[in-house]
Amino acid sequence: MNKIIIQDRRPVGEEKYILTTNRPAGFNYYPGQFVMIGDTINGQFVRRAYTLSSHPSEDFLMFYIRRVPGGKMSNHLFNKEIGSEVEISESMGVHHSGHFQDLPRITYLVAGCGVAGVRSLVLEFKKRKKQRVVHQERYQEYLVWADLFRRYADYQPVLSRQKVAGIKNGHIEDYLSSWLTDETVYYIVGSLSFVRQIGQLVRRSGLNSIDIHSEGY
Ligand SMILES: Cc1cc2nc3c(=O)[nH]c(=O)nc-3n(C[C@H](O)[C@H](O)[C@H](O)COP(=O)(O)OP(=O)(O)OC[C@H]3O[C@@H](n4cnc5c(N)ncnc54)[C@H](O)[C@@H]3O)c2cc1C
Image (cartoon, rainbow, N blue to C red; front, side, top):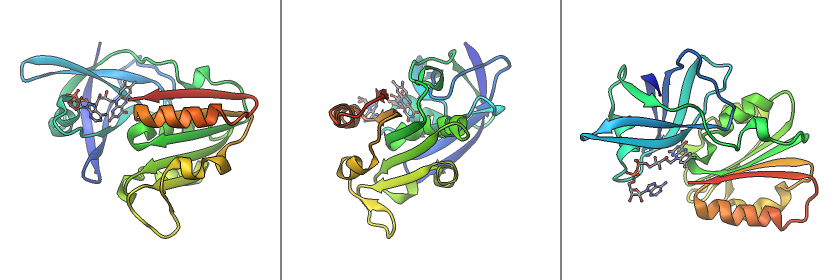
């Protein structure tokens, strides 16, 4: 277990926030991996998984977290003082850049906080692959890192609960057929039902040379 110090916390809309910490000496990871963050909450040690949004070339760690109503860790980290410490595990998870097949394209199909790992992956592949980021959110205020995604990828936001000129309205499945291509790594992350549904649609599409990495939580 490493200790990390909370250095910054930036709210994203009412429900989510970006947490930035120092990066412990010798802590290494691949884009797409997660860590377990642990701390004592009301006398009980609690651990939860959070995906790394920072890139290994950066000297800080970054997380994108949704405050789950009544949730222990997601609210604890929102309220914990800047400058205080929490524990993190080593990096974990197999859906990371080092395990992606060597294909020329990568398509991210993510919903909500499933976008957490996409920042790191987009920075990793910015010079090596054609990238398309499809991010479904409810409201525009949660379209985090939009400028970065626009710079390095074909960025396709979709809003399910708000109509905004120039942004698609609805759900990813409404537009999915126009975004599917072969010779592509697919990174599908969101709620369990989202991952099940979108994963099935991609698998049934009959595309060749595809490598699917999906995680639901
Ligand atoms: C591999 C992995 C990576 C993850 N990465 C991220 C990430 O980058 N960002 C992020 O915000 N979360 C991420 N999560 C989810 C995170 O680990 C926690 O489950 C989440 O923050 C809730 O923890 P909590 O302690 O606040 O809530 P808990 O105290 O565990 O739960 C409180 C209540 O909320 C319910 N609940 C828990 N999770 C959810 C949910 N997602 N939606 C609706 N209700 C829920 C529980 O059933 C319970 O009733 C990841 C999970 C996994 C497995």
